Amino acid sequence: MTLRSVLTGTGSSLPVRIVTNAELAEKVDTSDEWIVERTGIRTRHIADEGETTATLATDAARNALEAVGLTGADIDLIVLATATPDQTFPATATIVQEAIGARGGIAFDVAAVCSGFVYAVGVADSMLRTGMAKRALVIGSETFSRILDWEDRATCVLFGDGAGAIVLEARESDAADAPGILATRLHADGAHNQLLYVDGGASTTGEIGKLRMKGREVFRHAVNNLASVLGEVLGDAGFTADDIDWLVPHQANARILDATARKLNMPAEKVVVTVDRHANTSAASVPLALDVAMRDGRIKPGDLVMIEAMGGGFTWGASLIRI
Ligand code: UT7
Image (cartoon, rainbow, N blue to C red):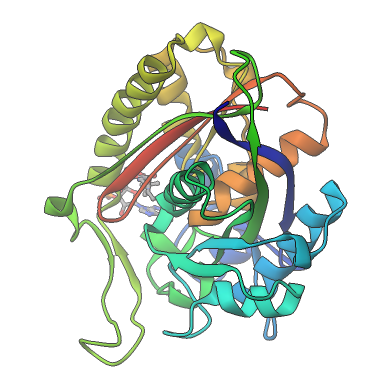
């Protein structure tokens, strides 16, 4: 029998406050028309005082546990993807571990920015399949509003805050159509690490810094890298793009989603889109979108779901999951 990591449930959490494009246009030289046309974003959630990466992650984790009828005591692995941890250390995953009452297992953060959730899925899947843990919470949680330069119109309109979580469970099966993570590919190319970065850090300036991005260049790389990693994962798993029921992409820009779907020859109806409501929530965007499509009934048991992301580093990756 082969061990597989089975996705048993999802959860999410968003800050209460919703900020519209019109509100941003009062602060920087931009417009609702520009933002909608260039990005597809209409609103984003922004954390208020007291809402942090850890509190959002904890809410999303509880929401996912509730969906599968488990408690924190059932979890022996927490992998939390974030670029905006509550503190430099300890890992935000350990704050969530304590809050949900999961004691003694494994808990750590993964830093791969917008690709963080896909990286975290890859890491958790490897650990579950080698028997290091039995039940994992994989979380993407971010408060990018805290690292934005609110005077830079080229970046501050693009991001939002939020968290999403999934429960993965190690189960034995040899059936070809059994649920589970079928294939994952992860990549990084540090040659581009200055196209999307934060201009500070504990070891350099001693300040956290602000996000800086050469958006047009990131865009170009994103479409090419995503198309190629999606092809790799489909090849590994022995499927074609036609077999995919749902594409759940990282939600950076509606135009990137359209271009990726076009490259795969996938109809737009098969792409889960939340960028209009959530904007780019970095590592949280994929699990947030997954949770939306699981809860509204679009994603059903047996469906073949592809998740993918690309972000700072550059890092990128994709994972094919049978629900
Ligand atoms: O999640 C990690 C990965 N990140 C991404 O995938 C982001 C990828 N990049 C993008 O999504 C797009 O490149 C952006 C949305 C960031 C920008 O769209 P673009 O079509 O590439 O615009 P641009 O950067 O080429 O800028 C076009 C014009 C510029 O003016 P000029 O030089 O043509 O006069 C900008 O100054 O738009 C201007 N501009 C704005 N105008 C109004 C930039 N930001 C704004 C703004 N409002 N907020």
